[in-house]
Image 1: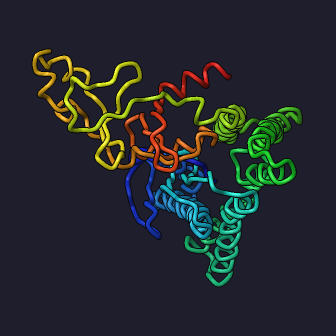
Image 2: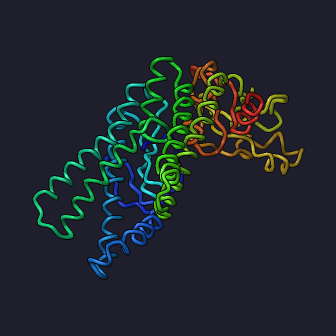
Length: 368
């Protein structure tokens, strides 16, 4: 499944780079592999002996391959539309593709969502085709299992609720019909809650009501998966509501006015009132004053000490030219890229002020 995201620390072991996109095996995937071996190995042991656990490990590797291809399809689909893709990860929860969807559309979002399950359907056909030409044995069993596994992954991911790919299709449909992506996400999140409850009923409640002998391993897997679905659905609902709030906050609402000061001006000419921002001779913001360094300058030296001596240079990316009436979400990608929690905002080359992450959070706390 695909998910929006920004820059983040490496989530695991990097195993490949595909079209510039890093591919990771998450730190928690080893736990999933151990669980698969522990559950499947004993079932195969009566017929295979000690080899059963190697075959069970093979199942875990095939699952990893299926997840990697699924997420890789999301990444390729997103890249085909010019959407930035940050990473592909396989972990305990299956996998995810972190991508930037701020410039997406309902149609593009739907395509990116559906190519993952379609890739699994293709792998399923391949697995069954290989099994059909193999003699009965371990290789035949693994190929058949690969076909079955990918078919289940495709069908499960098409269930209509977030965080599954089918939920992203629901989000895209509501977005297309209403013009409101955030409403689509909320609706798809509630659909995800409904899907979770139906899965629990089907695999836990229904056998219990029939009086079937409980399969605690199956129940455990079901509850683990449903916990993941429930958390993802709730997060989607929260993100949808928050997105609606963010769309009502303009860049101008979180701007702090500043007073530009040339880098070689003496400290005695620092403006009062609005906080100063250091600019170069072209008027471009380049630095912020360091309060500690400023306080260490003796008053008698202020007329002979340039502003640059007590400044903290900022990276070039900290300057963002944006319409002050644009939604505040326009700032997020730049703020993540800079990593300092502060941006200098300009419009048509004119410095308007600065925006900090703290100011944005304070504003949102007052709106939610």
